[in-house]
Image (cartoon, rainbow, N blue to C red; front, side, top):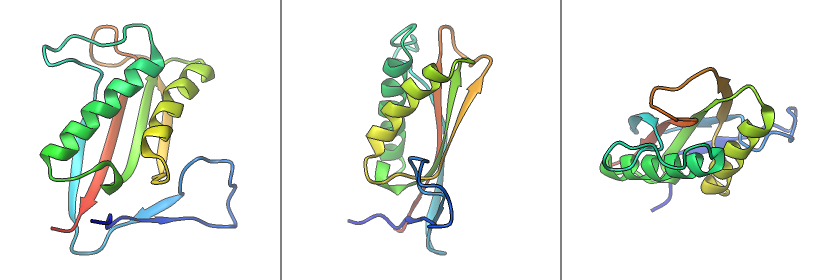
Length: 135
């Protein structure tokens, strides 16, 4: 089943960004607002301690599980915000590359942000997402 999300690009904006600049969903879409996906195992322990890419991968898996619980898939995501606890651009890029690759050609509008701290012990990455599905 194809996604109801339409990604929007503009030839008047830079193509350096690795995502669409906007996205829409049909007026009858059910919107799904995910809590921030964290790199936690089923017992609440932080995974991939000290590893930005590893935590990003764990967050993607958490996000996919939350999407499935809501009746959605990764290609139903309409936007993301990737939070990385670092002021070093290379750390942000390491996390971003994992998230970008997980979405493949469904390159949703995204914001990548360096933050000072995240909520769990040893947490370096968190992914916020919004999805839209037509039931």
